[in-house]
Length: 199
Image (tube, rainbow, N blue to C red; front, side):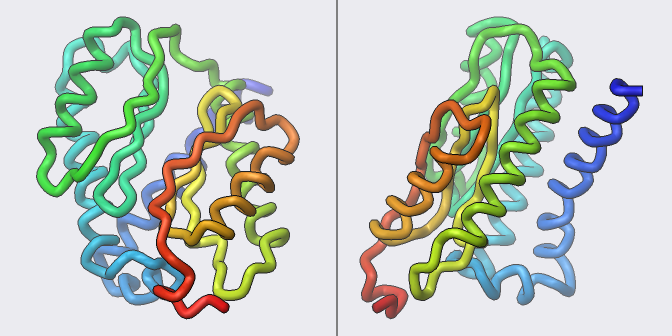
């Protein structure tokens, strides 16, 4: 019963991860960009990068023995998960770097056995709790939780987004205090307050 629940949770998570790409590529592109500080073109490009990267790494030897997650934001790509050997980790990074329009790569892969379904489900729960906390707890003017992208791997939370210094500090502090979080790793693009007319 537990296994069925975890499989279902993982399936739902995978489906929800596909939604932004579908929306950004179709009629809903404008709606996605409403609370996003990236340009509409960059949102579409980030989704395209994710698809290209996933297609490239799917052809690598030993890929079936690895658990790899990709997040592309503002041309910067975060790679998370577990690989069976160092060689595959480097091959994944190289494939990402060769992808058109990728500006930089954050390779956070570790050499370890694939995460269990229970671990993946726990990480998904942490991600959901962090997103909720960012939505309810940050009261800074002009901030929207959609400005921060959240991914979790082995209870380590990664944050990406275009934010100012105050928003970055608040987001990191809030994420640190979410139950189950062991570490917070920010990969923010920091902008000045005036750029977004935040007073």
